[in-house]
Image (cartoon, rainbow, N blue to C red; front, top):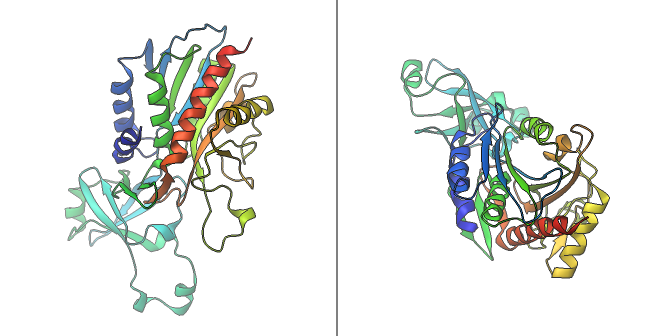
Length: 339
């Protein structure tokens, strides 16, 4: 699964432009799918008949999109002014490499010796940044990019330290890799594996996907923020790397189904799978839309802790990724045993 995550993270797929990711997942899933479809929102649906048939299906969900950039203006001297696609802290992008298709660039800001004292004390704003693609004029830049072009961070995927991996887009290509791994096996129960679009800009794809399928149960597989950093008080760390899968009971968009939370918790305890829950309410996922769809959907969540989420260099622990996979597999097994 780790190699699958690396391949997925290398693909460009900002919200609304998930084509490369969707095409790859579709090619990987087609040999195993009983049915495979794409909807007008760009969501990818992969159905696998299970050993047990239910009147209404089970849905596993992971989003394909990543945070990115979009070109808003090209200056006379060939620099790009841009906006973020999804939630990105401007402080994490200065000096970072980005790419628009085959065109590469670097995010820049006014040199420190040209800044005023007040500017140096304040966090930079997006309007203060620009992207240098090496063009000498507006005309030269327009030959490479256009207004409205999507960009992504251009960062290397690296395994380092004691079992860690660094990459862009771990949120949520790790979830996509978990679903792809599971759909290669015949599930215990009829299952729709759903790869959603536009999560980072308002969980938009999930809303239409859940409305279409009307599932009884849904498991959302995600990455979640970990603040287990030096000098951060323990109560504010949310969750931590190397402590196992995160089973959330609540976030800013969802109060998760209590019985499904307990099902996952008990499965982790019985199977010896390390797990944790969030120490403070933070973040949000596709579950925020899914659990309110139609007459309501019983929804649970699983996540891998990520440091530096929504940045060019998110960091995960490989052991946590394995725990998420094992618990997602357990979820299907246990739902298949339910009457």
